[in-house]
Image (cartoon, rainbow, N blue to C red):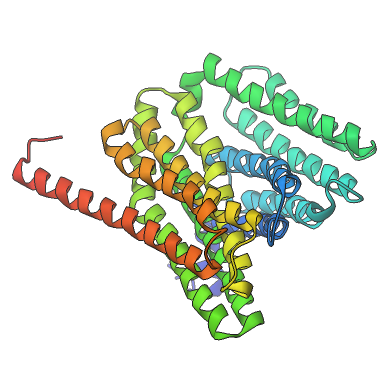
Length: 405
């Protein structure tokens, strides 16, 4: 019997047919590659709330961020439900989605101006990619139902986005909003009418890992912004503020990855066991938007503090920092409660953290920016220390009483 030589081509192929193997329960590299483009979009929007943003800048940030986030969670959802999708088909889909997301990122700074047509076209193209993937899922899932929901959900909304590209801005925005409302409404309707089918097909491990890896990239962009600001200023004051900013990001990452990722797995399994499709939708599609938006706002506040460490933060930057922290802790608290955690275990840390974060907005107008960052570090440290103490108490109680749940 002739032995097949082992070499780069053999390793890359994964099997005798030359088709690379793909574990449906793990995030594929092409999905991470796709995320990099979306984080570039987030970075573009974050620049709009650097300095001293007003309500118009914050409103623009949210109004442009949510359509992009909604497109991202749609991509994540359909890939999650397509375990039989080959690596090559996944790669082609991700590259097509990356092209759409890249144009979306380029158009973002002028999406409410001269680049509105490009923003519309990119969103329409993204929905065409989603339409193809959902139809693939429908036919390969051997469903006997008519795919009318798919054609309306992404086909109809793609038409709205494409038409918007040729309309004046005030009319285009109406079609943008209509598209999002139609999609969210259909998702909510599916959750009520076909809940068991939707919950049963979700891969919990893939969904939680996908969100966690996206947060990693967002935190990495925050660190990159800190490095860029310190490098541009290159002074002891900027270096000190940069260290404090890094500690803020580090504590955010510690809180999410030490406590959040495990809770996501357990919580989604708990919701799935109860066939709580609404809970799964809220905790995977909508609440994380608040989390990521809050982390992006915090990064913008830090970037503003570094060049003027000994001056009070401008009101807009103070809101970015304080409200961002409040969103981070508030979102984590809401998700924890939705996952079945008792209020008595959540409110003791969530309530004081949110109140202190909002109080930081007022204090930032009275103290230097470096002191505001220091207060943020202290807040994050205290909440982290409390969580660690409570964790040790629970472990000690479990060891003393093995029969306890």
